[in-house]
Length: 148
Length: 300
Image (cartoon, each protein chain N blue to C red):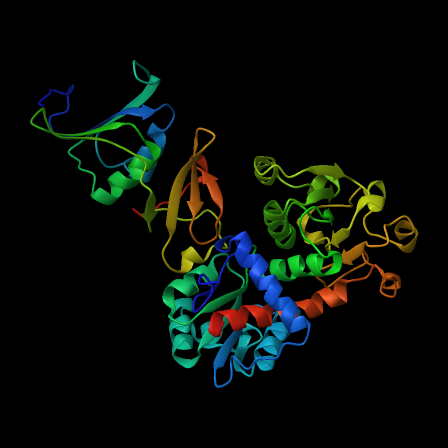
């Protein structure tokens, strides 16, 4: 379905991001000083009550970036836009696992010497991130460093 | 025991309750005098990237008693990894060419899991950082079973660093399989963390908190004591930590004291000659449990 999105002629629109997670997406995509970025925080949403929104001009996410963004934006809508038209639209879901994208916060973890692997599960309504190697569980806000 | 055969052992949670009971039963056979030469003609790499005298010697004793030979090192100081910058992964690939199995201790969490993914020979985790030390937990379970005749329903006191101790965490995790009653004895600074408590509640395990062993000594079947790692906390602890002969005068006759060793002041030598002392037998049990494990992995 074609749809015009705001003022973005070309780029991506990530809508319905869980409240508070837009900053993670900006940080992990390292967008702070590169592309024109529009950030909406605490916007009213019929689906979520309150949501965040990120629009990035002249940008496409790689499949690896998309996988990692999905961790922080489960349920969000990702749209790619060309000449004001939506050319690709996805609903983001939490991946079962990601390989070598997250740097384990445990500095003693062996993944620092090889590749990291993390699995995701929901525990008491929260996303818990589990390191395949050191077996530590983390909440999303504890993840600070990424490989993309 | 298909999970172990030709595969090795990385973490206790890789085993079912029945796997554990079968392994303990096999260890009992070795304790009762079973002799096998399963490792005859095999070379086992015993690689300790950090020192652990007790674990290394009991593993190497188990290999020798099964007829095998060991190669390896007692700490990583003299290796090419330490002196020439060889990567850990390359070291593993090299070891894979020289041995039929690897027994590995490593200071980094998850090192054994990584080794098992890179190598084609069986890997046995002899401790990976603060993460897992499955054969310690297996020998602890064997010692509880051997001293009490059962695991289910045992009143187990866990005393010491309940917050940080890998040994304690692993034993608590295993207790969920055997419906033990836990008495958690620690100063407030070193109490078990809420994530572990949630797991105990989820599995219906009964537990209570105590700041002093004297509150529960007359109820315990086993008291598992650990050394306080003083680097873990600042200042003095406001508690009466440790046990003594006076305290044991109120103990049940079947009480047995376990300790992973080495010990400090918490376990005075005066207790060694009492019937309650089980910690040296516990260390000896480590050989039988490791014999049983290696026998299953390499022969069955």
